[in-house]
Image 1 (cartoon, rainbow, N blue to C red):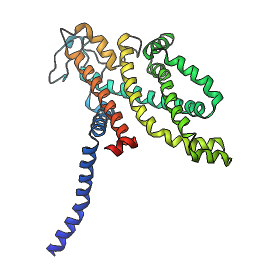
Image 2: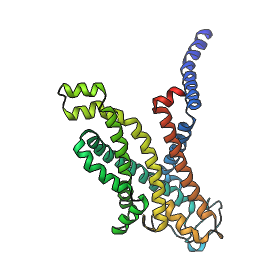
Image 3: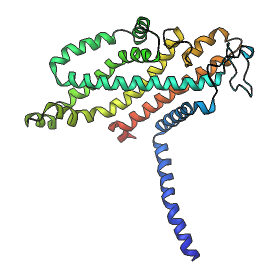
Image 4: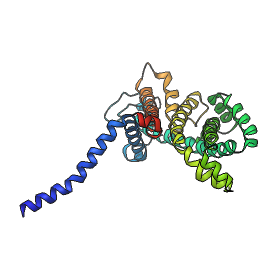
Length: 295
């Protein structure tokens, strides 16, 4: 009886050991992918449970202004007596929302335009000149101009950052479409009378997914930085919204007196951007067949 029980225990333990071995092998082969994904997952979890672990980021206590870190305020308070920890945690929500939104909108719009420009030569001549014109303008200057013409809000910032990012996605998708369009199986589909939409979505679109996933991570990191820069310059989200850029802008005058007010959002911004870039590098190594074969 004891032997049977021990055998059943070993049999149940074997799958968990195999899963643990596969996980260790995955981490060893993809350290950057694992590190970036782990950090981003932790930041996203903190942002989701912000109401449970942080107080109201807008509550002002003038009597507690510029207090150093303590048990009551883990990261101290700012010049208006607001809790720096709460504002940093809620700032993660805005930064992740902006980064993911810009990456999603840029990929969707850029994919649609890139498929059309790469497959239809007449559309390519007009659309790519427009994309070249947009790429000639620095992204942050175009974003500042668009924000200045409209009311400051999170959605305005998202649209302002998305427009300069779309041409980069278009050029990437167009290059893939131009190479795949000459493949024998695509030429055979064209010769067989396959509808254009079916060729685009069945034969060409799957080839654009791996590079688009990698490009989306870099767009997300760039969007988070641009949003912080716009908020720092006063051309981004309204000052009352707790974002890392707003926090750095409002704390720069008190750097020598209360450095903790600027260190927390600055470190959080650097860590999140680094994590997104690590995730992008890991996905590139994983999805690129040449790099994966070399590894």
